[in-house]
Length: 201
Length: 83
Image (cartoon, rainbow over all chains, first blue to last red):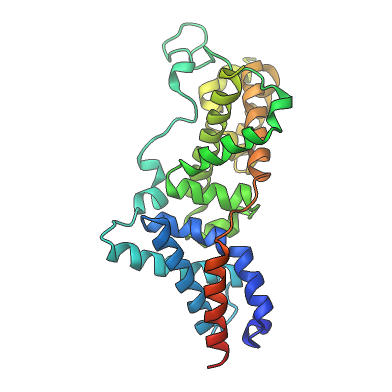
């Protein structure tokens, strides 16, 4: 692929774009405020890829290299916009604790028999509705509403099926932080599904 | 011997689901996790729902950047190629 790019093969370039554009856009949105700016960043990234490909040494994978270019451009762009780069969201997600499930659904810690056990258990979901298009739309909406860092991680991991190492490299974050962000994202999507599937019954 | 269900509360378990699925739990915690979901109907269901959530998310199609952006990039590509 690298050789084909260097040989100026347009089909390979188009294929790469189709493969990565959506993910690049999501990652860019961690750093910049609007979709329009994020799209600009993605464009600039591809131009950076073309300009750099002859010098690319293959020390990282092509994918990782492309995402590094994106992250650098997006950070600079975000700073220029006066947007503080959300280091805390990416690098210290633990700084703000977040429960996977509303604490009110558990018995209190001083409960004499069952501290921390379910007070209101999750009800099984109606299997036949899980596959409905509307249910999928609920998932999509829930992902759209996530904070950008969580949205980027769940998109790379669960929509695109990247490995944790790939996602970690693309975002330049630690294994643990990647897991924290993924966990929060998944937990919120589950909650959105529960709200939809159980309430609407 | 006391049961693991007492060692790990449901409220703690729900925070470990991703660590468990990622294979990031130390052996002992992994054992109590498994032991707990085997015996606790609420957590069993919760765990199932998390897996269903992941599966559903995986069935979403990747959004496109749009034909316009793609056309602009291909034009940039041709510029670069002819340089």
